[in-house]
View 1: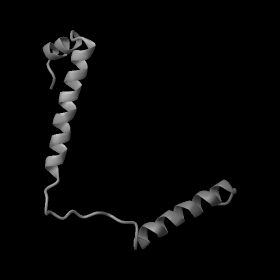
View 2 (view 1 turned 90 degrees about the horizontal axis):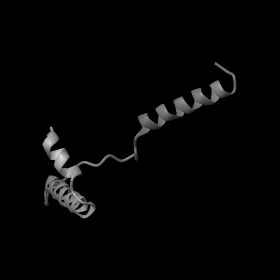
View 3 (view 1 turned 135 degrees about the vertical axis):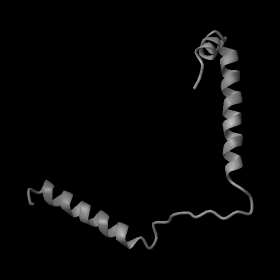
View 4 (view 1 turned 180 degrees about the horizontal axis):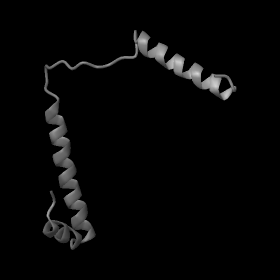
Amino acid sequence: MVSTELLNTLQGLSRAEKLYVVQVLISELAQQEADLIKPEQSYPVWSPYNAIDAANTMLEVLQTTQNQSNGEC
């Protein structure tokens, strides 16, 4: 949790100092994100190809919605 003292200190900074703090924090976050992906590691990626069940579910929802908008039940 961020302390009130830290927030007060940040609010007292000049615009340039605030931008610098933001830049440092964004750089840290970017580095942490880069560390999540390891080289020579494989990661599963979902693809919509061959997702027959998902396609059928979407078609059913679309048909139900279309029937309701046409006044059918």
